[in-house]
Amino acid sequence: MSVAGSFGPTFFFRVILPGVILATGLQPVIFPLYAALHVDSLYGLSAAGLFGVVAVASGLILAAADRPIYYLFEGFSLPLLTEWNRKRLSRRVDVLAERQEELAKKAGKKTLSAAQQLEAMRLAEQLRDIPVGVGAIGPQYQRGGPTKLANIIAAYELYSKSRYGIDGEFFLPHAFYLAEEGVRADLESSGAIADGMVLSCFGAIVASLAHIIVGFGMVLGAIVTKLHRSPLGVSPERPSLAILYAVAAALAATLFYALSLSAHREYGRRVRAVVDIVAKKLETLATTPLPSDAVKKAIQARREYLETLYRE
Image 1 (cartoon, rainbow, N blue to C red):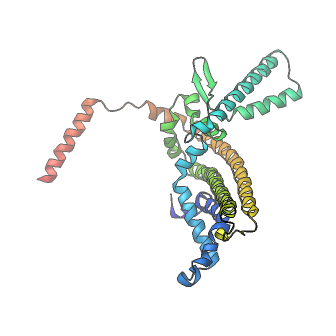
Image 2 (image 1 turned 45 degrees about the horizontal axis):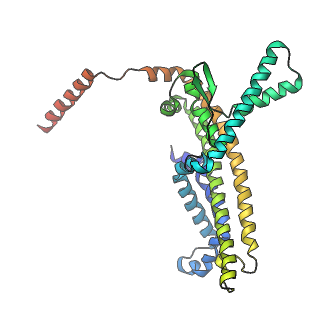
Image 3 (image 1 turned 120 degrees about the horizontal axis):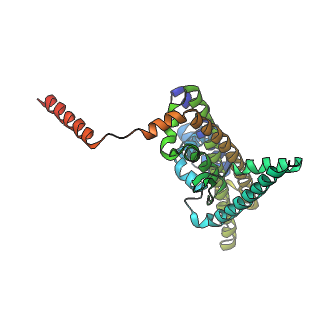
């Protein structure tokens, strides 16, 4: 990635936006420390400057932790908590697939009504989020994704396997590099937006949890000691203010999660298009035989011979 691209839209969505969301959510918790620690007199840093530092630092931390964050949102990190949702989504796929099959049978006998055609379009759109695998009788919907996001991501990661028989988990990065430069730039931009929505959602969740902890601490302190100072800038007379912040952050997290699903759907369309464009090259790459043992031994012998010459 070029330096210009690093500080372009990709950097904004993957670092700046999540960092600003997290810094804004934690502002009522962190910024009272600004006055308590006399940051302005010690370092000459204004409140706005402190916000910028916190935002960039938070964004970089979130971007660096994107893999475990994705594992969390895809339901792989906490399987015990997402098992119920996996079963619910599996039942939903069964219902949608059965209804789609019913409409397909009706369409083979007579023309569907306008309402049935609209329903068929909606079913196709919903089932597009479900990964398709290769079964004994052809492509089949894969059931078992623990979250919606996991299903959407798996749907485009398994596309090359179900359509061309090419292992997408291994060869998908090759497809991106085989595409033209303009296509790669468009794909990178779309992927950055999708990543930014997921990371921003996680930042809002962290902010919500922080305010819940603050509110709980205020209530607990009031009960136990009946005398407490303002914990990090939230009024001791108004512990409900911390809950209000927590609810606002939770609503923001819900919004960003919905946006992440839409962004990953759009990114998935681009991934499928790239796979279709470079499918022939991928097939050639996937079926290229590896060097035989004899060839490997000859290469190793020549390497050792050259090393001997260099030592002499």
